[in-house]
Image 1 (spheres, rainbow over the protein chains, first blue to last red):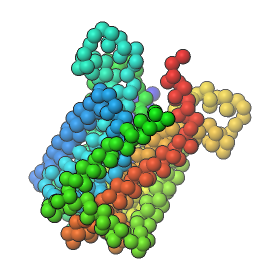
Image 2 (image 1 turned 60 degrees about the horizontal axis):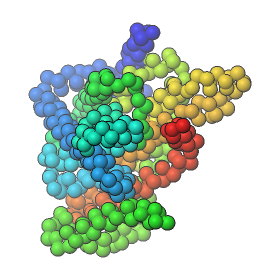
Image 3 (image 1 turned 45 degrees about the horizontal axis):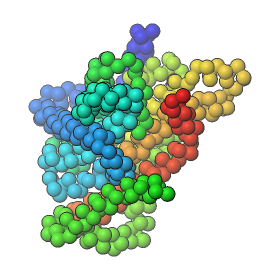
Image 4 (image 1 turned 30 degrees about the vertical axis):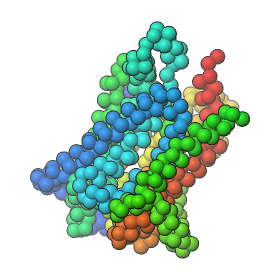
Length: 257
Length: 259
């Protein structure tokens, strides 16, 4: 069953690549705008041999990882704090609901003025966008704590910290992991956006350069790299999630935020 | 009465405190980049005149709406098709996973090649970015249609359009809405970015224009307006969702209640 599915998937992928080769060769679209798969693969080969490409990839990953780490740390700390201190959750609900939907790209002009093309302007956007993903999941997770377990812990005289550690955290962890996975994807989008629009060094800036210099196959090759990066991050986040939740008896449904 | 009052205070207190804090702390600000909130508020009506609303805000919102609706229709239609056939799903899955993983903003340069820098480009960019969360969530939702429901409907002879409408789409709708919600925030991002890249009007264009000409209070009003737009759209979405998924939220609340 699994083998058959994998074979079908491989066939689909092969068909997709073949279509990418055939459509421009048959002249269905302009070849200059949509180069055949083999040209893109060739351009990808040249990119991989270029040292500057790896520097750009490193820059993108640095921005992504630093931003994600900051956002996850802050999201967890703030989320737990909001739920542990009485009334804080109710008092902040409206502010969170207002700040969360603000599109992080609105901050692009501010980032440009404050930090120019430094790493900091990438971080500003990445952290703002992915912080909310984590925070909301933490809040949902903490809401899910079993009242009986909580009361039991209380009656056994566990302190606030012990309750956070032994009752709240294990309950919230599945939600937190979902938040981290969503945040990882969003962080990549924003890191590449910042590079593309602001011009901070990285893959996005390289794509922008390829575009302005009419290097179309290189541009497609870089986009493929960005896609593969996204894919790796998705798969990686899923496997981390599975590992961290190995003790968990069931796979939980995701909350829809 | 007292509880309503308490809730009102809790809802309004922190925003009021924050705005007051911003107002007071920025009041004497000499920093060029952080103008006093007073100046920003005073600039707002001067900047966002009737002409600007017609010439910049309206085109932006219309492009967003066009791209979003296009993506929603295409995503749900394709997703239903792919989700209801096991083999089709197996063939498409790796390709879809890859396409979804491509960060949508990099589509802007590609689509510019094909569609130039006009409205078409922006609508296609928004649609091309928004379609993936809708499509993949629809596939998941359609796949997970309850087997008992499906068989019951079949034995009652429900087929064709009625089958799609009352069985498949109805039970997939919570997932579809989750996808639509993700798509909305991606759509706003792409709306702004496509305008920052190449445009002669629109919200994103105007804000970048203010930034380049160092009209800092004007830029701040733009940021505030974008934030407000994001907020209003998300509230509207929640209203629609609550109406459309009322049955589902009710079901979940009932399942949660003990006993």
